[in-house]
Amino acid sequence: MRTGRENACKPARLSRVKRLAVAFVVIVALSGCARFRPPLEQKTSHGPTARQFWLLKQMVSNEREPSMDERRHWEDQLDQRISQYLRENSEAANALHVSAFRFDKQVVTGMTKEQVMILLGAPESVTADQAEMEKLARRYWKDLQGNVTEAWVYDLGWRFYFTGPKLVAITQYLERD
Image (cartoon, rainbow, N blue to C red; front, top):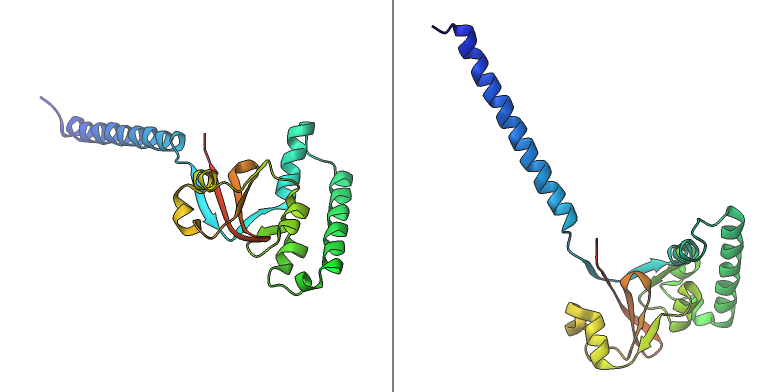
């Protein structure tokens, strides 16, 4: 014959087993979600910063982070190129995006091709082919079609779309692991 104490222990054991089973299912589900994340796909008005691209290039080419002296030297050179551009292009000095260019050193819509080149360097590729731009723009092509004349491709899935010399759209498509 069972005592009341033995009966009281059984539900506690069962609930503990149930809690462990639920925790196991949640952990398995979450780990599965982390592995199968969808690609990053966005259209934005603010692209990468010059520093992000410079650090990426330094890490890839040198397999280490740049020293403080290297960073300071690069920042000084970039500041000089930006100042020279603004001296030579007074209309750019009064543009709405000048603070993003001069202080944040971030690519934003409204900039010129020259400003993008100063911040990020030369693109990996350039195209004026409408079919190629459609492939690059993916789901955003409907918004861009007929409004862009050229696309520049950069690392990390960044695409910059221009109408003449002016940057009018930024997209990013990046596969995730």
